[in-house]
Structures are given as C-alpha cells and as structure tokens.
Length: 560
Image (cartoon, rainbow, N blue to C red):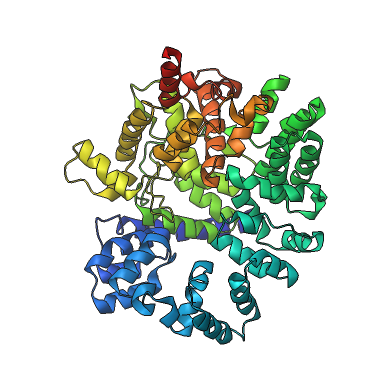
C-alpha cells in the first residue's frame, strides 16, 4: 500500500509541477491579443478579458470570440450584440406586429400581445397554433380576465408566464384560485420563484395568503420557509411553525438551520433551540443558539497560517488564470493529488489560496484565515475582522477570483468601482485588474469601508451595502418597513431583527449579510475582541446606533 501511495503522490507532484511551471509564463497581463485570448482556458476570467478586448476586435474576430465566451449573458452579451449589430432590435426591428415568427417568439410578452390590433393578434395566434402553451398564452393575454382563462383551461404555464410578465397586476393575482388549480401551481418548478416575487414586495404578500391553508408537505422546502415567514407576519404562529418544520427538511445545512431557528422562534421551546445548536456549521443561527444556551462547544474552525518563507514556485498571486488552472487541476485530481496541490500552497504568500482549496478538500473544517494581515498593520481589530468577514464571503480568500459579473480579486471589486477608486486614491498607471493584487485589494477595501462607515454602523448593514449598494441599503432603511420598532405596527417586535432579515428585497444580499455577520463574530473573537452575535443583532433595531440616515430622522423628529 505504501508503494502505491508513493507512486500516486509522485505522479501527482509531477503533474502539478508542470501546471505551476506553466503559470510562471502566463502571469496576468493588462491586455491580451486575439490569439492569446483564444488559447486561455474557458472561465469567467477569460470572459472578462474578452469583454475588455471586444471594442478593438475586427468583425471576423467578433464572430470567432462568441464561441469562447463561457457565460454569454449580462453586460458581455449586450456589448457583443451592440458591436456585432446582433441585438434583438438590430435583427428584429422595434415593431412587434411586423416581426418575423422567430423574432415574435423572442419578444412574446403580455405587453406586446396586448398592444396588437385585433387582426394582428389573430395572425399571431394562428402562427403559434403548433405550440399549445404559447398559443393558449396569447389567447389568455387577450382575454378580459386572463387569470380566469388560465384557470378554466388548467393552464399553469400561461399563468406563470403572465405573472412573470406583469408581476404587479393586482386583478390577475387577486383572482380566486380553485384548490385543484392552486395544487397544480404548487407542483410546478416555477412556484418557488413565483412565491418569492410575491413575498419580497409588501403590497403583493396578501396574494400568497391563500396557500397558508394547504398542508406544508405539498411545498418545496424553499416555498415552505417563505410561507412560514408569511404566517408570522399574519400572527399565525402555529401555522408558521408547521411550515418551518417542513422547511427544515432542506438538504442545505444553512437553510435547515435557518428553518429550525424559526421553528424555535415560533414555538419558544428550548428543545428547538438545542436542535439548532447541534449544527456543526458555524452559521449565525447555530452561533446565536449556542450563545443563548451557554453551549461552550467549539466549531471545527481552522485559522490557517504558514511559517514557510519560500515563495511558491510557480503560482502567480493575483493572476486569475493561475487560479483557473489550479482549480481545473484540483477538480481532476484524486484525493492524494488534491493534497499534493494543497501542499504547494502552504506558504506565507498563498495562505488565502491554501484555505480556499483546503475547504474544498472536505473533512468538515471551516477555514477562517487571515492572509496578508501585515497589510492591515495600524488598523483596529474591528476593521480587520470586517475585512476578513467580507473577504471570506466574497472569494474564500482567492486573490485571482473573477465572478460572473466580473467582480475581481479577494475583495471582489467591480471594474467601474475599481476605476473610480483608482482615480480617487491617485494611483498612477492603475489598471482595473490591478485590484487582484492583495495590496491594492486591501487598500481599496479600507477606503470603501471608510466611506460606508460614514453612514452605517452595523456589520449587517455594511454587508448589505457592500453587496447590494449603499443606495439600495438607504432606501430599504428609510422605507420604515424593516429594522424598525414600528414595522408591522409594532406587533412583531419579538421576532426582530430576524423577521426583517428574511424580508430584505435582494435575495443575494439577504443571505450574504447573515453569513458576513457570522464571519465577523468569529473573526472578532479570534483577534481578541470577545463578543457575541446578539450584540449586533439587537443594535439593528436601534436606528440611531445603526445608521446615520435614521439617526438624522430621529433628531429632526425630536426637534418638532
């Protein structure tokens, strides 16, 4: 057995060495030629550099580069189609009625269908007779009461299409649904998304109440959780509890713990809180539960560091393609090969990358490392903890990380923000992809957090702003609908701030902030500032100590 192990290990090392030697000659560049771009591995990083190159591409190069784009959506799709003159408007024109069949299919919205004359609508309907779903959708949209038509014809596809097209049509959403049709909606894979659109807008939640009379077992765990939250807002604790217990069957540990915690909030039973505390996942619910119970058990957290001075021989820190190739090698390798790759990252320079790959190796360990902490000398413990809490959530410490939306580096700065900050900080010869360099990434993070902390004083709110934007965060707080003692008429304060945290409009920001808070508490304690999650959770409901905007509002009110 020992000989087999050594053979595999040697083979793995040889492979990894070759990969790393390749890294040395392919460090990140400010720009790439067309031929260089074609040779790069398919990845979000390649998409990012293609996006930068497109404006200078020839017509022939544009056509060829299309097939090198991994994620053809969002900004790169818009940019490509504008440059190649292949936008829907270029291809199809702007008049829906005069478009050819394929163009009409791509533009088949309720708004376009309703705008047609009787003759044009009849022609459109006939052209889609071969596709029953679209045919009936066109008929339904033209009806005086589309919902009644979709219910009468048992057409769930048409119902969901219409709801997605016109999510604020109250007459449509308010139409009474017979149980048989409602059951069909619930079984459809699109129901989770549909319910989410109802719940994130206060004025639409009433249309979801009809589903509270159904057995929780009829729903997916995601929908069951939403309905549990809805029942809480309607002060139906027993109903909510049933939905949360079903939601707790989720295969996601985080979602399971979230639902179990709500089962505790709606039951008040200590045993339910104990169930949350048993979780080995260091999420905010498990942390809070252990705090409340005085449970001193430790999570399996690793604060990895390295004493090795030797620079990693090949991997280029901050180079997106070094990371891409390492990811590919890691995913292909067997367990021993993965360990060989991991061993190459055991250096001071690559603490972040070691942590990134070590967590993917499994074993139930959670890495809360502090790479490049020397770059934060002079910063207080709170700032260090906040930067690492964000970094862990943004990139898992990977300096060369590139997201689908082209956020770059360990702190995931968007190119437009990087360019703006480079100018503000007066950096000479700065290029937006320099933000993948740790020293630049952390410099920008500190500057950005200095700005955010002028307005926000709580890590949860800072996380919302870092992820969703400061404008989004300001609007949410000033609406008075969330994180306010007067929200829900002051009737549901016993569930706060957890209820407000579930109703944050942006799903990504909603989950992101919960995870950043857990990270922040863990890092504060590791760095010597002993604290609890409850401290920050309670502060969320105290406007004057959580943000400047509501603090100013309260000051003005006091003067009246």
